[in-house]
Length: 33
View 1 (cartoon, helix red, strand yellow):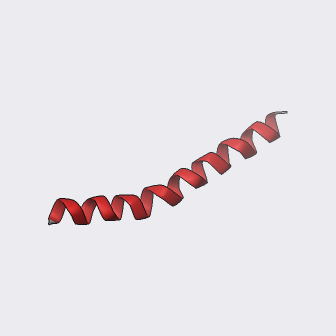
View 2 (view 1 turned 90 degrees about the vertical axis):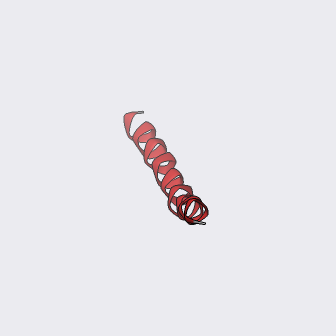
View 3 (view 1 turned 30 degrees about the vertical axis):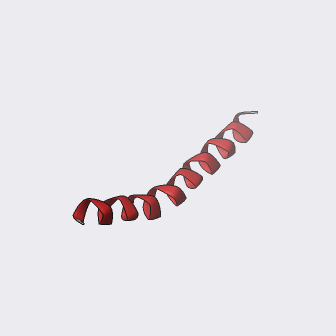
């Protein structure tokens, strides 16, 4: 039960976090070019 809660929280937090990191990397790449 607890592990499932953690994995659900993980999905909720890490999915947008990954998008933000990807967006950040794209912005950095554009800034570098």
